[in-house]
Structures are given as C-alpha cells and as structure tokens.
Length: 215
Ligand SMILES: CC(C)(COP(=O)(O)OP(=O)(O)OC[C@H]1O[C@@H](n2cnc3c(N)ncnc32)[C@H](O)[C@@H]1OP(=O)(O)O)[C@@H](O)C(=O)NCCC(=O)NCCS
Image 1 (cartoon, rainbow, N blue to C red):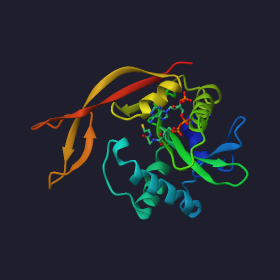
Image 2: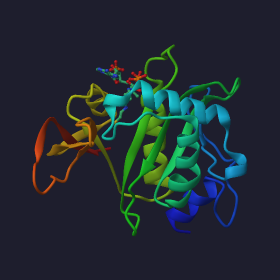
Image 3: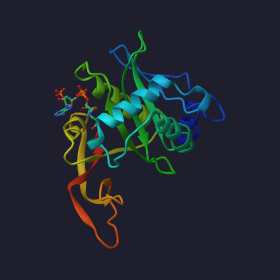
C-alpha cells in the first residue's frame, strides 16, 4: 500500500477507514490520534485548538492570517483532506483525552522517499518537559520504520527557538535559504516566501533552515 493511501485511510477519507488507529508515545500515557478530515467527523475541540494555537504562534510560521474556527474547518476538510501527502495528529492523554498539542507530516514526495515534519505545536500551558520531543520522535520513527520513508526534514525560521527543539530531536541544519517578504495591498506582511517577487524583492531578516533527521 502506498503511504498516500495509508494517510487518507487514517484521516477518514480513504477507500478504507483506519481513523480509529492511534500511535502510542511509549512510557508517557499519551498517544497521537489522527485528525479526522471527513466533514461529518471533524472534532470541534480539535478545530478550536488548531485555531487558538495558530493565532498564538503567528511568528512561528511563514504565512500571516487571523485563524477562525470556520477557516480552520475549511482547511481541514478541503486542503488537508485532499492532500494525500499530508496528515495531522492530535497529541492527547490516553486516559482523559485532554489535548496537549498537535503535529503533522507534509510535503511527501510522490515516490515516498522524503517527507517533512509540519506544524509541531504544544497547545497545553502546563508543559510536561520532553513530551513534545518524545511524541515527535515516535512520529518520525513510525514514518521511517513502519511506513518506510527514508528521509525526514523540517523547515523552520532561523529566529524560532524551535531550532533548538529540533536539534534536541536529532535534526541538523543542512542548508539555509533566504526568505522574501510578500506584502498585502496596505503594506502589511502577508507571507515570507522562499521565492523572490519579480519586481521588488524585500529580503527578510529571517531565513529558513532546512533541517534533516539523522538517526
Ligand atoms: C517547539 C515546541 C513544540 C517545543 O515544545 P516543548 O514542550 O518545549 O518540547 P519539549 O519539552 O519536548 O522539549 C524538548 C527539548 O527541546 C528544547 N526546547 C524546546 N523549546 C525550546 C526553546 N524555546 N528554546 C530552547 N530549547 C527548547 C528543550 O529544552 C528540551 O531539551 P532538554 O530536554 O534537553 O531540556 C513548542 O515550543 C512550541 O509549540 N512552539 C511554538 C510553535 C512552533 O514554533 N513550532 C515549530 C514550528 S516549525
């Protein structure tokens, strides 16, 4: 089975439904639950978490916008559901089902040789030191060992303290790409892009680290 079909099945939008499978995070009492992208099965509490966490961490990502529950719902049931190279998981306490954070995989290539860790965010204010790292390493191990994808990368803004988090997880910077500002009609920053605009390229103070996992 191709990894794309497995992702769709886990998201509840494939030919078979594997959406009730979970990936346990060993010795923590937590597990990664695939986020269901079937419009009838989207969990409102998960939508709230994604919306709130996206707005709280605006400077961590490349696009700037105000997230709303409606926009997040549409993103899940259209973009995430249709993109078979992407999957998102909610990190929950297995006993209480309380949400701790979320993390995903995206931008996998067609042949299944390379993928990226994507949207790795702690939601809970009460941190359990090391839990996000343990969960992300479980996800990386699953996609490499069980799914068979050989390379896992992350892209992270150079100013983001998460660079240290990824270092601690076994990732190292392979190259550093410049970022260019994309501004809206009122001059507001809309996006940081790896591709310069033709006429007026404004180089951002931030660059983009491409980091690769080394076991
Ligand atoms: C990145 C993030 C998920 C880390 O969550 P966390 O709860 O701190 O993770 P952990 O407790 O598992 O930390 C694991 C290691 O990373 C290190 N680390 C985590 N955040 C760090 C920071 N801001 N600065 C320095 N080190 C950090 C920790 O010190 C720890 O190492 P240690 O065990 O040697 O002390 C969290 O800070 C977050 O949600 N950031 C905002 C969203 C974001 O920027 N995501 C990345 C987008 S590319």
